[in-house]
Length: 352
Image 1: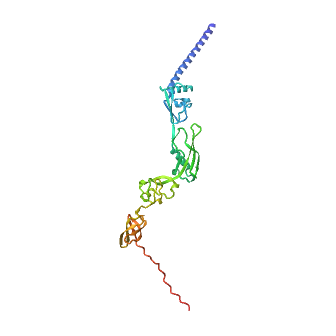
Image 2: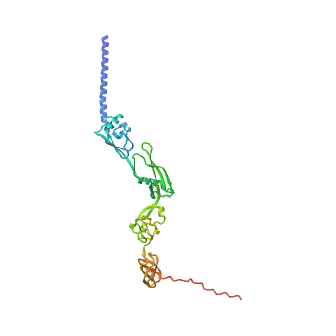
Image 3: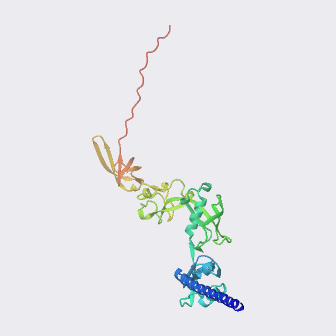
């Protein structure tokens, strides 16, 4: 009886050992299968980048390495200044990554990493256009395209953070009495920080196209195409009688004009075809009669102008009209017609 019990106990222990060994075998086989499956799924180790570019103030782990996983958003370094490039030693970077439990990084044999801070440019022309649009139609200024914006200080191209927002006005002030403006812009920070503020002051003037002299001109000179250009000038400087360039070409200056001066219509006249004291041909023409004689011009005049000339034969001064270079024409005087008077009515008989 005792022998049977001992044999049964031994068998139970043997079965228990066999089961344990089988479980271990299954675990080992399953582990190898899981490892093989992981390799087949292509899990890649972190890989260091040789050059990186950042648009903000912070360099993150995800900027430094590929396959950073959940550590990608961890900030580790401050970026270089705007528009500049700096370098980091690989040994320093690896030590930093290890402190954040990022290990097994493939360095590709690199010894340093290049880090560039990206920027975007804000030119003076862009700022000028933005301010012109803000001031458009304020206090009678007119369209933005007709405004000339001048800054109190020379405005250079600004280097801004590439991750920043658009240029937005915070406040705008304009004084029509002296044409001065004061404008504050804000640029939002991509990381939610304090926005960048840019303030500009200066003057804004409504302008229009004007014909301007490129050189000084004496009285009586004929204007050529090379003497005239078109510029934008303040409307207040031009007034309402500015001369168009195409009209001014070929016209004669009534008075001396300086270089850079705006040309007005009353500064010009038709070119003189007859000069003062010039010997001219005096033409007298009527029905069936055409006479010419020599005369002396007593004043200058252009085509269509009435001038006085002296008949060299009779020494009489007569009036004529300039009709061609060196020629003055006279017309016969119009006959004076007398209005017909009504016939006189017979006298009424006197009462006796």
